[in-house]
Image (tube, rainbow, N blue to C red; front, side, top):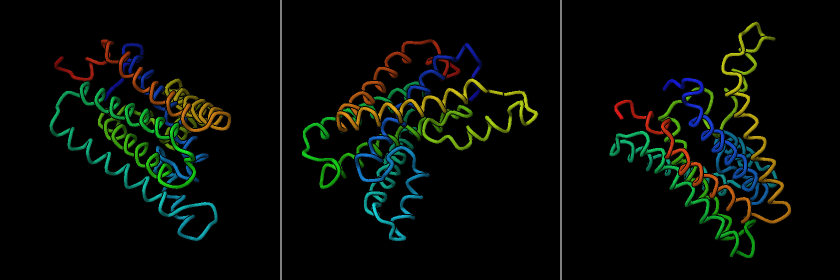
Length: 230
């Protein structure tokens, strides 16, 4: 899918907001749920390797729960894709699901005695990873270059490889730099809120931001341009 500069700035802004939420969610997951990611599955596979090798502080069960829930979410979204043709509807539906699950996770975190162990830990892992699986499946369908909303490896590679230092023309510099900045801000904000207020507040903020992003983007012309015929 081609993104045409200013004409599709609302879409890039929406994806930047989702990238920020990924940072928030993974900050809470890693710091509060026992060294596990629920957005970054690349990191989760690495953590699973650590746990399998017997490294202290890592959990095979938690990593498998997160990866499994993410995959289930992606499968469910994949089936939805085959039943719904319009990309706009798919994206907004995915964000509604993610926002709802993240908000529900915030409620669980608020009511639970602890999220670091026991049933609440695994409920949060499953809910957050499930929502991220749904979102990532839809983002993959949009195929916006350099903006995956959860992984920055190729974004950083493109930023460096196409830079003037490498003899390039700094192609898509703004988009790439914004994605990196959004992830950093989200991780910082999520960690800051978690360390001072616990898991419920950053998760509630993340879920609200996803829903607001869906509502605002859904009212823009750019959202209708996701479907060429509309």
